[in-house]
Image (cartoon, rainbow, N blue to C red; front, side):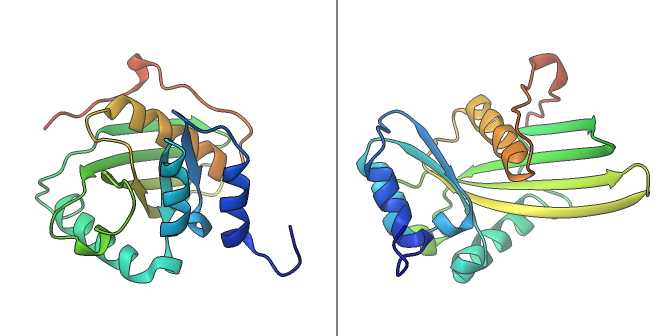
Length: 181
């Protein structure tokens, strides 16, 4: 990478050198840029991109939408996946919520190929200390909401990659508690 470059300018150059048609690209928050999602779509690939503070207004709108529709009581949006994992001395519950891009979220209109928004709510307890933490992460995606299984597999794989694990843990059907509206 050029010394005057950064990840935002390097990612499109990297993507251009890859054969991506039909693939899925997952990028952490640094890749949450319209030009990067356009570069992915230009190669006939899909994306799941983490949205964080570098896209403050987008994050705020998506976060507010999910707070109102997924995390409020009573809720109108049910998780497509509600999974428990007990490994590495931790007990973790992950709920994945997916929705087609809501028409009221005009901030998303200019995102190339966007079809869905996702929220992952995690509650993690470290068994040895009894310390419990909770976090919510938000994503923009060009993957259609109709493919719940693909989205669940994507989020499972992304979870392990973002948490420093070098393995992908499959989600066998008998270990998934599917929740239907």
